Image (cartoon, one colour):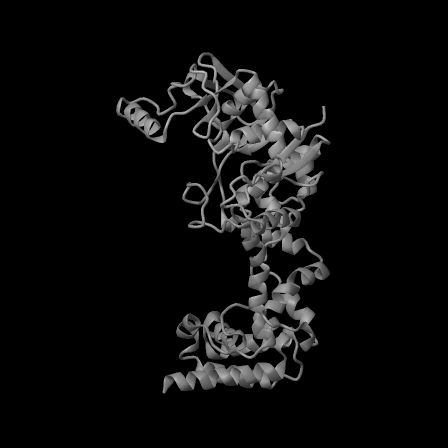
Length: 466
């Protein structure tokens, strides 16, 4: 039997990384099984669902290389299919109409809670044989005894007591089918065999199995993934991390880095830390996914992205960097040694956006010095800068080796620790203390520009000292 998985997002917001992780595991599992991966847009919430969010979700998945094997379907376009199933389940006798008012249901639940019981529908209308009206909902006749047992690929055997499950609403009074009914019908119609989703859906599974049984549908395979947690070990939210996939792309994290990071949220392959989608399809085992929540660590993502950036050829790196250079107004054609500058700075930050920002001083004049750097290193360094400037001006050959020798000689003559010599020059060159080795930095700027920037820093010290 062909294995078929699906990712079924609701287009009520942008694609978040928890959803991407679920889509990724579904995609990889289907490819391992030489099966099919589908996308279903669950847009029955007409008030909150938008095509803009749907487009964001589909684009984000495509950007990650997560492509469905068939065109996506929308629940909002499948009303006839749902109506056929509703007729079937009514005719089977496995559902009944209920006319309990909201006021009665609220009173019932309040009384149950007051008595320490679990709030659930009491089955008042179960045997009244009511007919359909605009005041009734359709409820499932949930078995009142026994238990639901299913094998979860992640969690092993899972058991739910039927007595803990009330008679679920299948169709609202306005005729709209509920999430659970649509979900079951869609999975059956699309030939889904394996449902891989977050553990927050675990309690939905016995209800959906009951609906499958009422409709005579075959049972499915399930895997419930651990929740993605923030560093505070609470469910990931915008308060403790960026959650939108596009936000990560906008910061300059690579697609391959996001796949690497998300795959490691709940699964690991020994000591192997860096891998790509092809590696994941080869090595991933859903049975090895952990049960405990998976913590999203931004520092880990930075480390992963640094490694993926380093693995790119220089040509591929510059192609990835180009949009971020353009965002910062950087024209690489403006400097003859732009390739040397980019190569020297490609590890300055863990993201492409950060690297592009660090490149700005090499293509533009400094408009402001970093205030903390000024206070710590620049103030009081006027005389040492003047001395170093004279040493550098005397160089006949302007290369990294000659510059390093001149700086070492100046440091010995001034009898200063390395930071007191190097950091004021870095600030003069870039506006901050961030740069490659100082000899390389000065070499990249050239003798004339280096001399000018040191002079500007000396003038700045004189201005703030008066």
